[in-house]
Amino acid sequence: MMDIRAIRTNADYEWALKEVEQYFDKVPASGTPEADRFDVLSVLIEKYEAGQFEIANADPVEVLEFAMESMGKTQAELGHLITRSRATEIMKRKRKLTLEMIRIISGAWHIPVAALIAPYKTQTGSARLDATTPQHEGRRLQVA
Image (cartoon, rainbow, N blue to C red; front, side, top):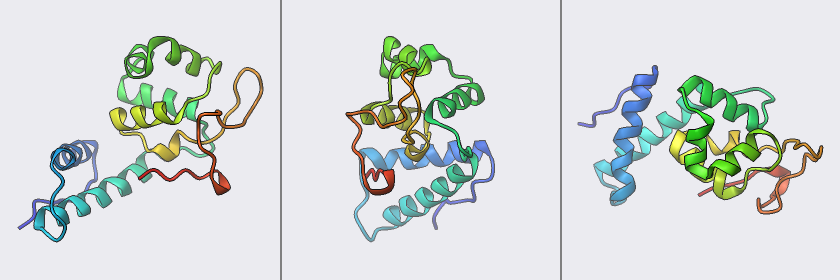
């Protein structure tokens, strides 16, 4: 029997994240109970994140500000992920997030990629995507 439960609280969410982490190092074989468990937990996590991290009309800098405040993180901790100078430039809107930065932040802080890829204005006033960030139809980025 699979040990799976609904994700209703942050504690449930943290439990589920720890449970799926084990499958990142050793991917379960398709069709096995472990693969089914991974799939179900992944769907539950995605559903919970969609409800918890939905920030209407927020740009990525606002998302990072909200995430740091709600998770008790600091700009210095962001700097440990993407370098201190880059964190400062991002938060002061002097530089755009790159795809690599988005992947790192999303993975470390469990922020959905979709919340970090929206175009936003920098101090120059530009709302276009960073030149290093791929652009796709409708400005949707699909990360495998």
